[in-house]
Amino acid sequence: MKKMFSMSLVMLLAISVILAGCGNKNQGASNASGGDTGGSAKTSNVQIGMVTDVGGVNDKSFNQSAWEALQAIEKETGTKAKYLQSKSDQDYIPNLNQFVKGGFNLTWGIGFNLANAIGQVAKDNPDKNLAIIDSVVDAPNVKSVVFAENEGSFLVGVVAGKLTKTNKIGFVGGQDSPLIKRFEKGFEAGIKAVNPNAKLEVNYTGAFDKPDLGKAAAATIYNSGADIIFHAAGGSGTGVFNEALARKQQGQQVWVIGVDKDQSLEFGDDVTLTSMVKRVDEAVKRVSQEVIDGKFKGGIETLALKDNGIGLADTSSKNVPKDVLDLVEQYKQKIIKGEITVPSK
Image (cartoon, rainbow, N blue to C red):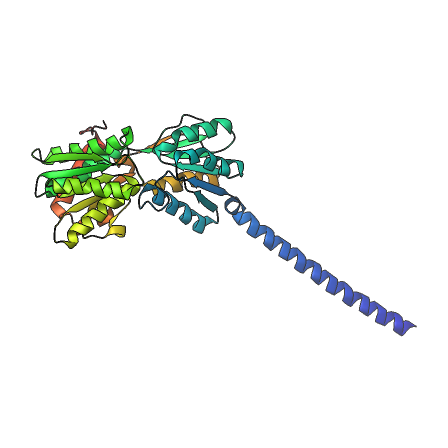
């Protein structure tokens, strides 16, 4: 009896040790899981949506820059990013509402054409966060990011004015609007600052998603004797590059100045003289990070030369001589210091 009691006691102790071990193991797993969730919950549970304008997410320009920024955020933080492409302006509000009503933490509208739609959706959903590139929407729940495109365009105007061999230069715009006028007028001022004899020919396609119209506009300008074209035409600007590439294959040396992103990476150095880079990607990253960090506030943010929000592409030295780049830097500093005021209209 005594022996049996002793064995029972030993077995009871053994079972207690096993159960205690299992309990500790389960508790540790719970703590580890809780730690992982706590470390990533603020990012992995955040959802950010983006609505393109009609140029689309593969416009090789600002829509694409914005989407690439959100893809980078998704990779770096675990934040869920999604885009909806607008085929017409009738899609803007339904696309925005799909994200807003779907509980997304931030909804981007890319391009000034979405301003009215962003304003309406923001008014209807005052507790939701929205943001827009290239336009100002006066609402407490909207962050508006705009750029001093005229300043960056002035700098590529200096490049064009110094490097043209025909003294004929072109500008192809998308929609004729105050925004695109800033590109045109800044570019013209930069040209005139260094080459008063150069003539600027301007052609607007009326659209940001029609490469065929961009190609036709470029052909007209090149045929008139221009050797350099600066475009601010979104997806229509693809046609400008296509026309330049076709002429290059025929032995004609013509150039295109890209816009919004370094377009030499897409179209090559043979025809891309330089690009006026607008840091849409950095703006999208910064505002999106504010949402991730719980620090989002509506308001207006203007990015200019002094903010490094615009400027020439880093690859510019491939085709632009050092002395011209040095001159560009001199003008850049004068603009930053307020010694030169670049026209915007």
